[in-house]
Amino acid sequence: MKKILKSDFNKNVLTLLTGTTIAQVIPIAISPLLTRIYTPEDFGTFAIILAVTSIISTIATARYEIAIVLPKKDEDAINLVALSMGIAILISSISLITIVFFENTIKSILGKDFSYVYLYSIPTIVFFTGFYNSLKYYFIRKKLYKDLSTTNMFRASVLSTTQITFGYLSLGSLGLILGQVISSIFANSRMFLKYFVDWKESDDKSLKSVKTVAKEYISLPKFSAAGSFINASAQNVNNLLLPMVFNNQLLGFYSLVNRILGTPTTLIASSISQVYFQSASAEKNQKGNNILSFTSTLKKLIILSIPLFGVLYLIIDNFIVLIFGKDWEMLEPISKLLLPLFLIRFISSTLSTTLNIHRKEKEFLLVNIILFLVSVLILIVAKVVSLSIFEYFGFQSIILSILYLLLLYRYYIISKG
Image 1: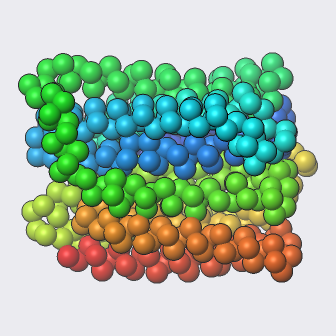
Image 2 (image 1 turned 90 degrees about the horizontal axis):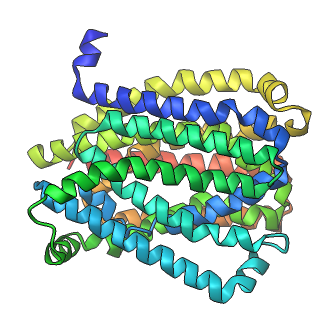
């Protein structure tokens, strides 16, 4: 144990992982309560909002936040944060203007029961997500893993408290949405204060300097931003199109599967990926490759994922009905069908930042185009051949699992330099 903790990589992963785990345990722990004060339809509507904001948020900073870890000088990193925040303000403003002028059209696409109030939460969430992502990478650069971990726990606590409160006030989907907005405000406030101190002390924070770093890392908005947008579209295409192929209630079930299975594993992977990105970037700068960081992280992910997903598979039959009630029993077969996909995606997605480390922006774009097209094609096949709900999720799990395995092999080849 002492040998493991001596490694900076392991200590940093453990710090982020601890905060992330606690941050995810909190909303998962209250899920049985939320399922009794919110309906599947409420979760479905909330899932649509999160899908739309997740897609837009990938370009909210034009992906300049990725570059914050890379510069040798801290002044350049500070200017990149300022640039990212400025773009977030611009993108959220464009989102707001679009909703103002086309709210009826957007509402008709999302559904007749979709409230106008829900629409105007979209630019707000996009704004705070852009700020959070910028500050998160700045904290990673400064190795403020403990602060980042604490912020994640604080954000989860505020989210859970507000969603429960608004649920008992019978606000429906709006309660879930307001919880998301309020928790983002609190999280950003904590992080921004620390960044602002560094910004004030910086000797180089002119508009000219911001333009300089914008030009230096212009390949990110050119290629990585589009790739991330398409990747987010692929990941959220189910939330947007499932109600059209099946119904909004099914979307509520699917969103809860992601809440109790997908979200925790994704954020654990994100914690490992953030530390991997920092250590692999340093190795790449020194040796020209990052094969040691890649293979070491891959081994850790396999060791972690086998017991994690194995236990989930064994307990899920009795877990769903016991915890969430009989109204949610459809989650059992859906969860078991999707577990292999969650496992393989957990490993592959964690190491996908290998493309960013090696500045493979064009390949990043291509990968995400493929993911998006395959995801859409699966839904089209389901509609055309009239697949049942369970046939659809089984088909999706098999096809996407194979694709993520192929991508993992490609990341391994790239890491060798």
